[in-house]
Image 1 (tube, rainbow, N blue to C red):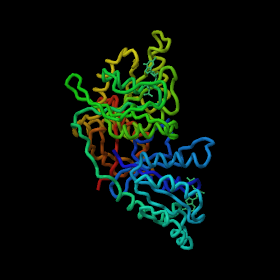
Image 2: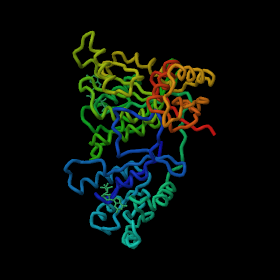
Image 3: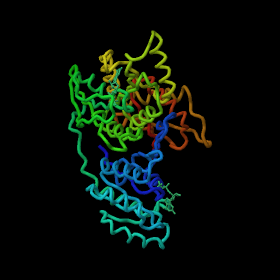
Image 4: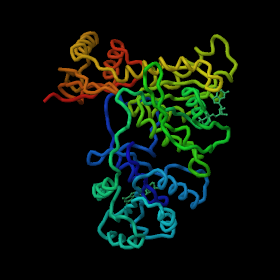
Length: 435
Ligand code: GDP
Ligand code: GDP
């Protein structure tokens, strides 16, 4: 699991500016996902080759909550979820009572707390740092999020406190499953239906408490592990009631899994949050299956399934290649239909394609539909190779990475999908200049 770094602090100290400064935008031609709203609250970032998740807790809005409730929610997220806390304060304002409130909540957390004294755009504010030493934080550092100064030093300090990297205790070809979706769509029920016994307590009451454990099982000689998310419902935390928070749980599970089952509720239809959660699984390059649950609970005829499929394909435009399964976790109807689909998605996700076949497919595709000149330059692809499986990742060595039009990348991706079966999995195409 990736280390989590949470940015906390009162409003307007510059949390979201700092967040944007730290987050590194990674661009690859297949990364554009129409229909995905990127959440500017959670993101992956990398420093000194350590990847981590960054949360701007200030972006998780509690509508109309009083100041103390809001920062309490921020602090709770940081204390419960983060490995390192960046407590952001404002050098221009100096130490305000609101900062004391935040610190009071963080104080007993036993988490490394690094105070980022922000807005030190100019040496005259450097002295403000002394005000904040009294908090007894792990480290205090001057930064300017707008100018980008001090950010490297801040991150050096942050990564120092990351836990050791732990390997997954599972075998390479065990299929790790995450069951993701909005609250109450039936994730716990589906987990139980898949396992064939009640591992997770199911309840209408949000906030059912259970321990969190991964659950391995074997079916037809294939080992699977259900990565726990559904069981991790805790009682009484302000932030757990937030829709947005569901994303964090989902992301941690997605990170560790091979295949994500995105559960939709047939009674509710498709909501924006469903799309956001799907977006994360795809952005993180995981195989995915859409599970339309509660199929027992709706009125249906011979057209209903097709209508749903059309609706899903329209709403989730970026999920053309994702299988859709209709079932009922409650009555267990059609549960068995899920496993062959999981296995297929996993096999495609871990597929390797020979270099000669790849080059043939790309060459043929380029002859059939040659690229158009861009800035008077014509794209040449010299060589293609698969550098990685899980998800299948291809490197195209080209004459100039900057002249490939986005739509042409899409075209090549589609050709690869036509030729090799990648149903259920994203694929990644990376461009590299040939030296
Ligand atoms: P948040 O409410 O803590 O997320 O704060 P924002 O990131 O929205 O920033 C609040 C205001 O402070 C905005 O007007 C930012 O442009 C400004 N700000 C953020 N970082 C800096 C900085 O390093 N220097 C200066 N001068 N202003 C900053
Ligand atoms: P979670 O929050 O996503 O884990 O959802 P739960 O598994 O706790 O289910 C929420 C509610 O939906 C419970 O009342 C379940 O009994 C109900 N539910 C789950 N699956 C089904 C289903 O397939 N059909 C029907 N009718 N209800 C379901």
